[in-house]
Length: 82
Image 1 (cartoon, one colour):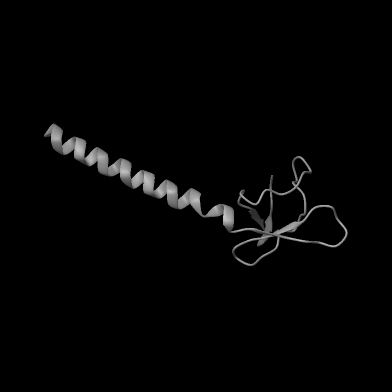
Image 2: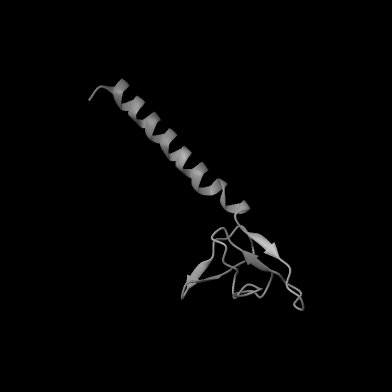
């Protein structure tokens, strides 16, 4: 194989990988919106699919939910994480 063609193909592959990373990592932080809940000190998150998290604190450390982390869906309901 011609080395010039091989370098060009490798460059295109790196550009595609970078574009996919930007698309996958860039929009997740703005998809969740914190919602005030009367009573508890923490808030639930409303996700881009319009579902509200079933928990108001992290199931692991019991801290606030992180809006950047994607939820885990259990029985069709989102569970937020820190």
